[in-house]
Image 1 (tube, one colour):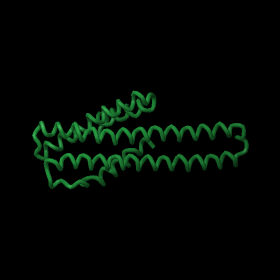
Image 2: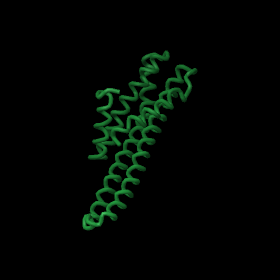
Image 3: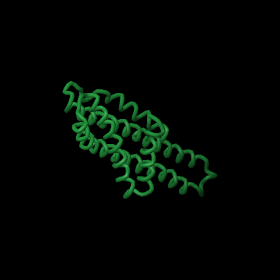
Image 4: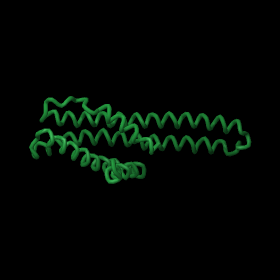
Length: 168
């Protein structure tokens, strides 16, 4: 992946976080175009005509965009909850900062909660990529019946998990 490939997704996440009523449709449109292009190119490589590949890209790209946008919305909402937990715990403990044990225990609880949330986000993204790969394979299978539905799905899952790590 390059910055050019990931920047639209990053901007979509920001849009969802700042204004969900605008960000969700923007994320869907960006993803539909990107995933649709991938499906189009894969279908062409597997023997589809340009017209057939375009139809597959439109239909299956929309399915893939729905999966991506739903996952991104979940990710952004989760990050907001994790940062809210931290702020809430900090606010409750400001008066007790001198009592190191209270802060230590609160910090541990927050750390466990945030770590659990991060793991959930990693697996959410991996699962999202897994499903999107199956959608792409289903589209291509309409022109190449030998295309296995699970081809590349595990690799897509791993790439999704690893690709989420920087966003922690």
